[in-house]
Image (cartoon, rainbow, N blue to C red):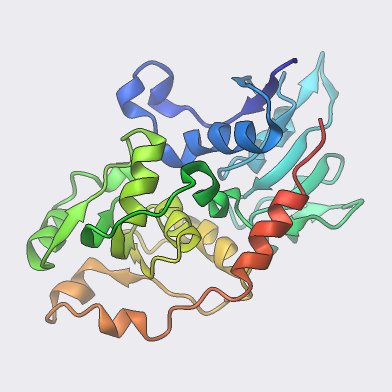
Length: 265
């Protein structure tokens, strides 16, 4: 059976297997399990499909000999509040309502939700709790002094490295009692396993925050705000003050909606 040609952001991982960001490489793992077919990386010009990641902007390059072609899009998001996208593609799912509103001329109504919410289907077993607080820095924040300070200040905390193998990262997140993450897919995977979590930010720019707010909009949550490292460090650490308002309404329905929306290619 012919493999599915999937585009995802490989970053430095294309040359170095130790630099493969789990949130991007999760895309291939999930597409493979839900399609029942092998997945092959393809540049956007030759791809059949895009799934996880803030890569919808790549759709503009989906052309053959300069002529536009159509992609199957399953849960992809936008990374820029000013983006506008073509409705010519097969939109099965998009990450959130904010991204959906950027698509002009939609011919159908895609479901909303990030396929990372289906991470438990990759593990298929219950995971024993081992980590009190998982700190998941985006790869750009891994060596930041703020993350080091949080690790020292929060009892029984542990850094989860986003460059570890995909399934290892998923299992480590599932083993947490609570997660603080500057990585969007750290939060998404935590939600998928029902692990309470808090969006942590080291960058307050609207452009950086857009993808997070797009994701939260899929749950109808429009008032989610990040906590900064300084806010945590200024007072004694307490999980309870972040647990009170944690809820992800309609999570199970969203998960099944994403499965039902998986494209037939």
